[in-house]
Image (tube, rainbow, N blue to C red):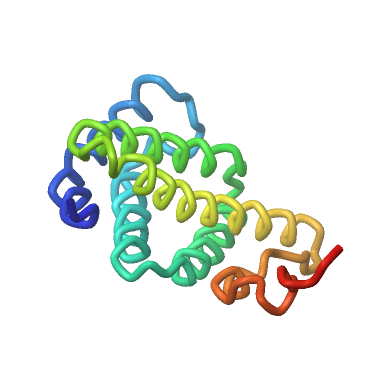
Length: 157
């Protein structure tokens, strides 16, 4: 099944579930405002683009933009992380309802990788801004080049 189509079809339901949980179960200081659904929708759309194009570079750029806006507005890092975790949980629940069992793990891993990258980029940016200096991050692009240049599996120990 095409995960992008599933997520698009269920986007309203997913975003509504996240919004409902935010309003009723979480007490996040900055997320009781009219802009929250718009920002949640923007994050969901970034996720869709990453899934569709199998590329996480865009979500790291988006994370940098969001972290700077939120940091300047005195959002706590845990507030952003909580919303991303909640979005991930609701997406998992929805995908498990419609995906064949043999497709669940790979698609959940894909969603988790993208949102995990987003959370890592947000956290690194927050630490960087709090400390006033650049910190080391993952070289995401190198992950796609394999390990041939690092390991020689044909050599003997």
